[in-house]
Amino acid sequence: MEASAGLSYLQAHSAQSTFMRLPSAKRIQLSSTALLGGIQISRDGGRTWSIAGLAPAEIVDLAASSENSNIVYAATKRGLMISRDAGKIWEMALQQTQPATMVETMPDGTIYAFVIGSGLIKLPLSEPSWRPVNEAFGDQLILHLAADPTDPLRLFAVTDAGRILSSTDGGKTWPPFS
Image 1: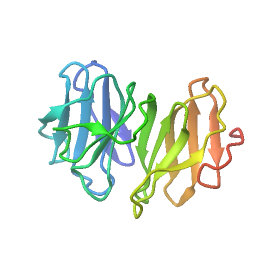
Image 2 (image 1 turned 45 degrees about the vertical axis):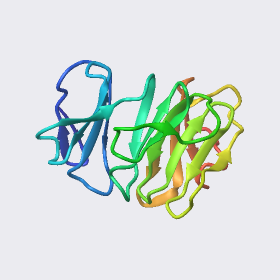
Image 3 (image 1 turned 60 degrees about the vertical axis):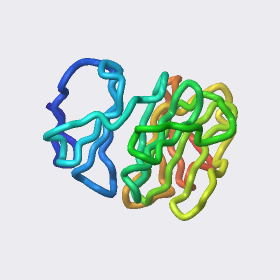
């Protein structure tokens, strides 16, 4: 059993999976498992789970809107995808179909994604379209991203090369973490 922020998680099986807790609704959780091939949802804090829909092919990461638990984003090898019905139907979130390596919801509701060829992009909560943040990652890919809950401009990233990066300006610059 793992504990995080006072919450406990128990691994139900060892299949490859992506698990996330929605920031806006602490009792709603989503999971994508390769074993079951679907997006699972719990609306009671993880006590019971149901299949919401099929996971998109070659899913890498999963994130949901902090404002609407039916809006789910998936980073896939085909690109960034969106579902507006909790995972039942998926469509491309961007016109380009380059692989996406991560997607993450921040405490302020901003959605960040890393798309190969475009770099780090974001969808601010109050805006209708994705904006570029930083394309200067060279041959590195961002695999994980987290924000300081007290300062949404302070971001931390882990790259495919195992480097930890830190940004204090919302992702515009990334000196190595020290």
